[in-house]
Image (cartoon, rainbow, N blue to C red; front, side, top):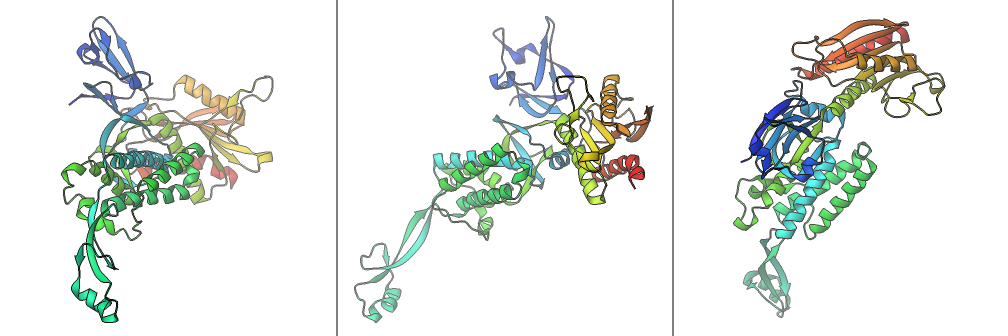
Length: 440
């Protein structure tokens, strides 16, 4: 078993030379070495490694694997962040690990599930589809198999067709519960992708459709069991052991059952319910998208008189300067609250997300950036959003001051809150207090 090194995002930890150096050369998988998952620094005395902004299981070589955890406490809430944010995890096809099932399937998992199911179906087809003997019966003038005397008398001889006999035989067929489970999972993913395709990029949407079509073709001869009777099969459920030469079906069936059940994966807790490529999460991107989506949903439910926009793209983005530069310098605040028609838009608040635990007030550079965005948008308020640090600023809204009539605030979000839904609601309430009185 490889040595598992626990490591927090952006933290340095020492590793032994023997684990990473072989015959005087650095021994790291090429596909990991070329990534930005970590940084190494080596001196004559020691070798240290720093995890970058990716959370998950990262194998370095045959002997060492990193277990990178978030820099802030998110215990029990990571799956919620992934579901709400809509961000897709990166996955390492070369590294397989076990996951527990938890929660409900959400759009950003469709591409991953499709890729894994496509690989699983190809695997079972290449090694041989499971076949089972099924009893067949027919009336024939060229009998084979077993002649059924009673039915032959009733159906043929009594009616004067003495040249015909009722026969039965057993035929090997791929149309069995295990393969029906795989086909139904393909069908289920196709339906889900059609319903939520708008949440998936165009290229991913085409890839999903292509791979699922290939799965259907590879399972030719298997009937679609819309009633899901295959779920009663003990082999499918893992209650009965697969034939010795068909052990490769188990991972495929476990994945299919996850899809059929509409399950997501637990990003916090280990498990072995389903084995998939190691998922890596860019926590900074997830945190930003999550907070934006939380406010967007709150605005929709509560009827806020503002649009919650992504400042990294139109119509949320704009030129930072009013005039004076031949080159457009874009202002890209993370969250833009916009009110009024497009021809006369006002900006009650500009929010900048910083995935840095709030030990104290925002760093000068982060505050300067936020103030510049606020000035460009003529915002009434600007807010720096940061996760809570265990010994730092308490969760909630904190006033920093004002600049040229613009309110300057800091909001600290507790990513490890025991009631994360309440934490989301509290943030929406506090943000709304900044702009609702002036708009209503």
